Length: 602
Image (cartoon, rainbow, N blue to C red; front, side, top):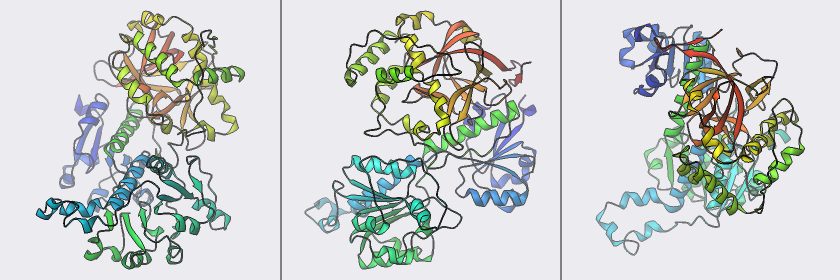
């Protein structure tokens, strides 16, 4: 059976393809082909090819790629170069990438701490015999110049998701945060086109009017500027003359943003206390004595990498391949750039209001096209501002359903402490256009009130596995509204923005936005992946809205199916059993028992 399946080749990309083999079982066969096995003929016979970067492949490997193949470029470091090369070769190249703001912010924070605490220099002497004398011995001169984080001023140049994440981390270290919007400044000077950014900094961060003012006031400086077709040297020799004496600079963006020669001279004369660069370019950084300087850290273009990012990229590629083989959907570029996602973090003053207040607001707003399941709660005796009371009620509700939702409570308590874990994963509705008021139609609080007015035992008593047994892993389904007046669809708030669940009546079940892939996490727990959203899982965010924002299973993305008939059932969220979506499920494609291939019905 494996020989009759289409072949997917990992070309010098993923050596251990067991994850892809398991995910695409019955759909396609997956093999790894190294550069030493190009002549085996497996590349030419493949239907899809996975690779890191087309430009980094040798010409012998590039010539074996065929125009009719689907080529997925996973996490390319230079998408423009790869796309141009693919166009020259006549290849169909699709870029697959995810948001890496958290990784970049973590790396920058680690580099600042290494420069402030001189850990890279001290680690060289940790194994020596003289290190035993400690701070009062020979190591004392090496510790001179070490700084504490508290009270320092961080200056952020640029406006991006990683800049916001870095600001949040710095405030936790009790630093002051300043930022300067380069894009807005260039537009004011007529040097570029203004691009509205959806990224918001914490309220404690202060915006500076000029770059020179930021440089003069900052102890730590970090660049977060997007790469453009014509890179502008932001920190040139003249601008660097305004930098505060003893400041530290970290640049994980394009190396062309800084005048390297001027920076190197300021390091030598002691004006700048240290710098860290991710992927330094040019001969000025190739000299051995420069790389041996204790206050210079140079990374090999690794600031945005993590195992979690790599797994998310692989999962997104698998979702694309499943849609390609099962639905003949030719995928487009699926890239989550740094400034496009993770803009939903709520800070002080922007915190989501409590459940009771949100319910009263949702009652006042009109909801069109969606079923209204609002039932007034009469037992609101606790204070709206009492967070402990809300946690206590949620914990008691979770304990009452422990026999149905085992394994969820541990994740619930851990994620309850992380206020920004989910809100940073979807596009914030605050930046949606006025036409996106329909997105609040799907605010789950209205349907939650109906379920919350019932007895807690109804969830466990009404759970019927007959409905779950009708679905299998790999099935493609469409979700009708309860009245069957329309379909639940996945769509974007704005072009390039986050995905959320909406309803439309003028669509058919053949529309990719209507189709959802069933993925079972366990026997009774499932997830719904959206074809239109590139395989993202249906989940709820902190605003109690249905969104598509994650590729990895967690309790937020896990659902239990309640009901005995697919025509009349409910999706109950494992994270919050009060979150319910009343649906009518129609199976669109099923997996054949014999060959494991999904085939359309009707």
